[in-house]
Image (cartoon, rainbow, N blue to C red; front, side):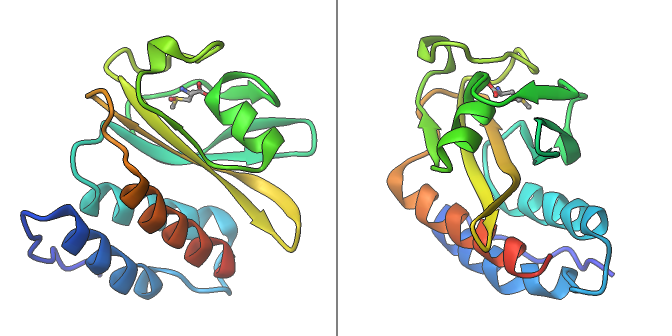
Length: 159
Ligand code: SME
């Protein structure tokens, strides 16, 4: 059961709460889709000022839409396409301050103004990406990246 935890006004404190609470909703015995569905819900609860958070999964050919919170989104993204496909191909986090300035950005939700995409890699193998969109420019800073990469690592370690 998810108990609505009282959040702070401070995003860093909320990230700390998120990292403390995420493990309660992950069980290595669960199917991957179950773990990612709960992870998307927990992230959506604790991350301030976002309009979309979710996963695209890699099937050795392309990325396909996984569990998420937000408006319905693009069902497939080719490797090297969009922010997700580029982060997946490079296997590195991409933080985009203004999506309009990112060549090849794929618009799924017209409200999205900035974005961070973190690859999910397990034992050197690409599983997919964690994608988070925000309705304001420059939402994500280096400090956000640190906490969100920790969350991504925690999720991957529990798949
Ligand atoms: N903007 C992403 C597409 C996915 S949506 O944001 C949910 C991209 O450029 O890859």
